[in-house]
Length: 154
Image 1 (cartoon, rainbow, N blue to C red):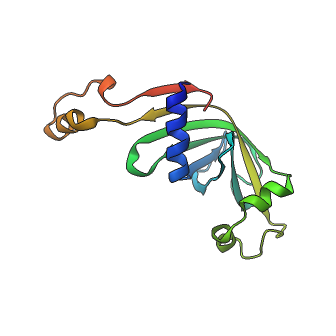
Image 2: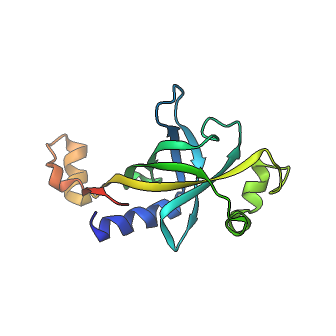
């Protein structure tokens, strides 16, 4: 994947760290999760959830991202595994997480999952003034005018 698109994705995702997650092969719908991001780790994201959550068991998963402003879209796949490094759990625990899990960071029903990303597809939306005019007036928009698309390691 192009370095510029990768950087655009991570910057936009950090500003709007929400992702719809679903285990592969699961019968239920995807659900919104708040990603815990680490600026130095561009290969993984983390989530806190209850062990009985639909993704709590871990496994192969896919997530969809649509950032605030709808300027970046992504579909990423990988493997959800329990994060066992206590320092990572401590680093990401905060008041917002505590609001969802009032039993605290040592509550045995709360699991921290790490989503090890294998690959993904990223789309950027950059219509610009000309493209916005075409959109409003119903004129055809060529795909090269709408942004960029890349596949590979995110």
